[in-house]
Amino acid sequence: MITLSSFVKKFCLLSIRKTCRCVDGFCENIAFSPKQISKVFEKARIWLPVKIHAEQLSNLGGASLAANFGALSADHLEYLERLELRQW
Image: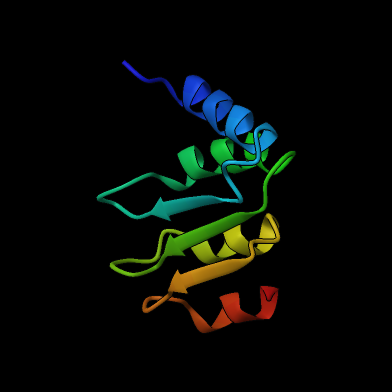
């Protein structure tokens, strides 16, 4: 079984070996929760920039995570709230 911690460690090793250029998270009800994405981004951003796919099916606050972590990009955002635009 792959744990979140081992997943992050693998990303760190890949970044050191220059085989990975960024961490790309998918924050939705059918994928990872904002809490899970935040844990991954918190560890990964030490070595790698982050990107996110969020607010495609619902608004879980993925766009706010993107702003807080200085994401290179935030894709989809169909359910982005107007107030969240101010964070960018």
